[in-house]
Amino acid sequence: MYKFLKKARITRLVRFLLVILTIFLFTSCSTTTSTDTDKFVVSYPNVSKVNQDVEIRVDPLEPGLSNIWIRIENESFEKAKVLTNYPYIDTWKPEKGGFYKVTVSGYSLTEGKWHTKEGTITVFDVIPPYIEDIRMIPEKPYVGDEVLLQLKLKSENPVVDLSLSGKAPSSTWLNYTTTSKPGYVYMRLPQLNASGDVELFVKSRAYDSEDATKLVFNVRQVDRAAPTINVFTKTFYPENGDISFTLKLYDNEELARYVVEFDGQKIIDESINGRTFEKAVLIGKKDLGTHTLNIVAYDKEGNMAHFAKTILVGSAALSFEVEISPSNPTAGSTAVIALVPQEKNVTYTKVVFFVDGKAIKTSTGSEGEPAITYALWDVEEGPHTITVYAESADRRAGIAETVVSVPDRNGPQFIALYANDRELKKDQANYVFPGLVTFKIKVYDPGGVSTSVLPRLLIKEDEFAGFYRDLQMGPDEISSDGKTVTFSVSTTMALGYYYVTVINVQDLSGNAMRDIGNFLLYVQ
Image (cartoon, rainbow, N blue to C red; front, side, top):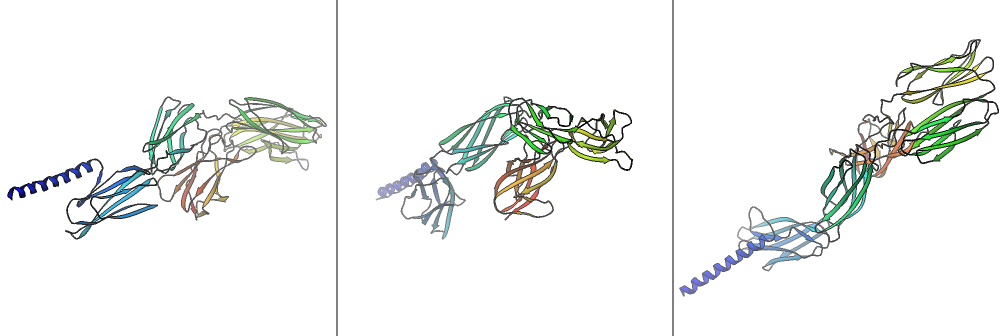
């Protein structure tokens, strides 16, 4: 009897050790979630796939554990089940990828209270994460730019690993890795310090499936050189004479378009290409008096050149010249434009002063007093054509001109910022409706606004520290002289309040606009 009891005790001991060993071996091959007071062990895989069986096992560590519940849930799925028979195992086959919360509860009869353990299972989709679209900001990068890649990931996976690799023109190897949810993902490249082609490989991976694509783009040197305009025409035409001119254009890269206006009327608006262009234009007979010729040329980078000339049609010509004092004026100062006679004993009855084809002063003699032969000019930066038209008491007329170039050291001037055509104010609340919002910024620069280096609209939501949306703005409206430009971009806005600003507005000389600060915009 003693041997039997002893043998029975040994058998129970062996069984108990086998149970402990089985639990140890099982938990060593899977994930075990535990708390500070373990009444049971929960085992399940941390990672699984769609349509693959997931086994969740509960092993009590002491007798008296009952009412064992298993709950699996996320934002679109919920399952709850009570386990009544040992072994306490539930098998679940997920139909959709995502993060799933696992909660296991059991009631301890010895303590008279519930014990709960929680964990997470990440379920991946069997379909690879697809890189649906890649967009660069800016779309046409220049040397010195930082490129922001906007990737659109289509996937049912909860998270996707992204990796980027490639070689920059400066022989620097680019590497970037990140983990993100599907949807729009932003990856910022380092500053590109050399011109040339960039070839990048972008790979998306989730669990054991992946997708890859290649992105090739060119980094260009900043072309700030505007086209060169040469016009060959006479300043004075006799009565009934045909006005004509020969136009020659040149650009260091490639021409894009030119516009010709005569007396404010557009007579040519033509797209061109190549580095050089030449054309003979016949305007024909015009009335006696002064006429204005304006020509604007653009290159592929949006750099603009402007030419203005005043032409006189008359029966006899006066002889005089134009002088500027000081000869090298600076922007923001006042210069004197003077008519310098080349004939003696001439009484001037009318003098008109033009800057870039626009009259800034007209002086007419009266009561025996001659017209004033000088005018004050508020100097602006950039190249300018100064023209003077004059009439004399002996019924003659004349015209003369000169060209002056004023160094440009000031950035563009901010005029206004708009959201859905409503001007935003710094000192009051600004409101728009949710949905598609079109932002516009209007700027002015006497030397011309650059349309090759494009502005960027930054949007910051609520009290967050950084701007979460970085959008490139394109030229929307350009004045005929290229001095006033409106840039625009559209984006979808949800309910909330945002801080908005615009950066990277430059003139043709590379001067940047001053910081305009943040505008508070309510979307409601």
